[in-house]
Image (cartoon, rainbow, N blue to C red; front, side, top):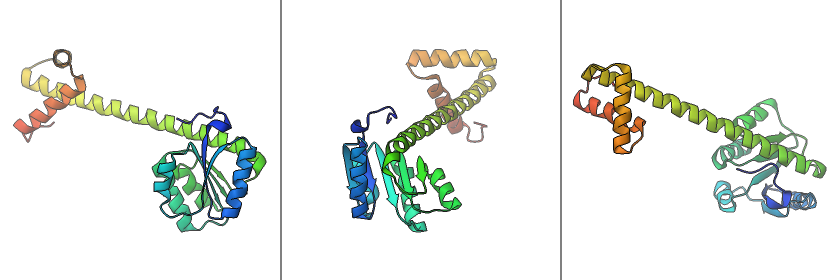
Length: 205
């Protein structure tokens, strides 16, 4: 995870700007703001592949007058590369801003890139990205826990019907089996459900 408290000099910054003159000005501004590791891309062809090769800590995208196709291309990359992205445009509309947020762009700045704002905006982009990533992780963990609970309930139900066990007894049996086989209890539950569906395709498993 990129750390928002990292020193600017520690970060590998990628600048994407089709205007090579403007890109070089941005590079100078970034270096003056303390960002020493700056890479420039001024050709949008094969952009996702090149980003993966460079593996930046944070991405700065500067587009003077973005059209819909260009924005959608950038948003697709944002979804794919999973890096903090600070995007600077000279003008925009509400729909583009909403699309940027949905795509995971961490900072979408409409009035262009100004040198004195580089460092605070990049720090904000990294901080937002980390917060968003943490929420996503927590959501996935919660979703996984719910799925595991469903598996355990279904497996317990199968044991209760087939072996005449109580719910507690079914759980204890699965836990003991998991310990004996050095496996997770959810793996035992999944095996039970799979076996039941093979033995009786019509079973409610």
